[in-house]
Picture (cartoon, rainbow, N blue to C red):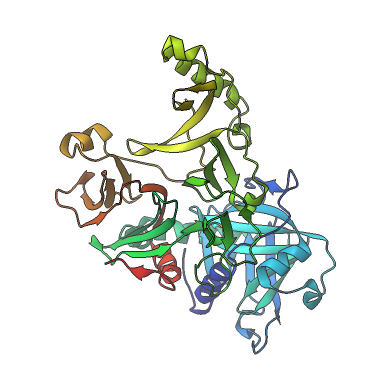
Amino acid sequence: MRRGSRLFPYLLCLIILSLFGCSNLDFNTEGMLIPPVNKKSAIQGTWQIEKFVSVKENVDEIEQYIGETAMFDEDVCMMGEEECIDPEYKIINVATADYFHNKYRMNTDQLQLSNERVDVITVTADHQILYEFIKIDDDTLLAYVAGGFLYLNKISDEVNGGVKQTIVKDNKVIVDSEKKKENEEKAGVLLGIRSANNTYQTLWISSENGNLNPILMNEQLLVPRKTGFWEVGRSSSRESIYAKPLTDHEKPSILSVENKNMLAGSPDSEILFVGNDYIGTEHKLKLKVLPIDNISVGKGIKLTNITTENAYETMLRSSEAFIASMDREEAQYIIQSPFEDNFTLERRSGHWIMKGRLYYEQPIGEKEYEDFDMNILVPSKLINYDELSIQWGEIKSSLPWMLDAYQSPLQDMALLTSKDSLSIYAMEDGRILEQPLREIALQEGDAIIMAEWAIGDYVDKWDEIVKESFNILE
């Protein structure tokens, strides 16, 4: 992305930091989530920033932005001096009053909005959020910044071909030179850990130019999403799992009693994995994958909600193959048809794998169920990045006590776990260097359930949020 003036990078940063999701919205209606618009975006065309309306006290009008132009299509995204190529657009339709109340702590009267529902359009590039717009009608967009809303009015359904060509050309040059080099210098990961006593914490591990920064730690799970950062964890009473967005200047903390996005009455529930939009849980021997936006419903999604239509047939064949490999005496007591919503992810040999569960008609000894591997690729809707350039056998041959491995997208850092430690290694030319940069003790029963990576400029942006409440790990 090319940065021109100092004003619009500041605008971009404020938009990203201020649009950190919302809770208790109307996400229950089927069809409200719309896949990325590949051919023509919902905000296709050329727009002009017409005015700024303050909704908080002591906020001055940001006159510098008035009159600037924004352009959006399938190839380019431009907001004043901020530009990018190959953007993606995602839409979610929400109840207007709930959205503004939960996200901005305001009512719609301040903006004189009469719409019962609005579209919220998120613009992303390289899996990172750039902008979020509220579409009032075909000719009006809102963008929140610094205590108020910028109003964008459409002036054309098309974008200027000459300007578009220049943006594409300039950005490709940047990607191939300075930007690519900059991105290769920084990487960071938010690592989520579940303890044996079913509490949760997040480690922030980052490096720059091959040097490891101080490692930071905080309670609960800090989850980066396309709508901003969310906090996921267990309530202070330890009776419920919860998820909530972090709003303006809010620090991660123990659950507020006001939060309603909770899986109530589940003191023995465990979080098995965390992705951008879903968490995996286990409660009373039942596996569930729940949408972070609406975990309070407690209803797990089905395989076909996140992958291909024939996913259940694949699940069924995988269960049949597992049953065929079982001891014959035990196999005759297994219930042979798995449930489509009874699945999760599990770490094994440097990757996430899909697992299902089968139950015995009655317990055999202490066994009440059997888990089986599913021959299904992990959908990107569950986990974004899960790559390992080094063969797992190669790692085991040199470090046989290691149980799992995580690798930076830049292949400059690897995290290896054993029974009692997390070891951070530098990587060079596709290989792990001999001596670890740092070793962190793990307690018996600790399990890594989240690994969310950032590279380049996003390391600094995540770092700003993390430093508000995380402490240095001694």
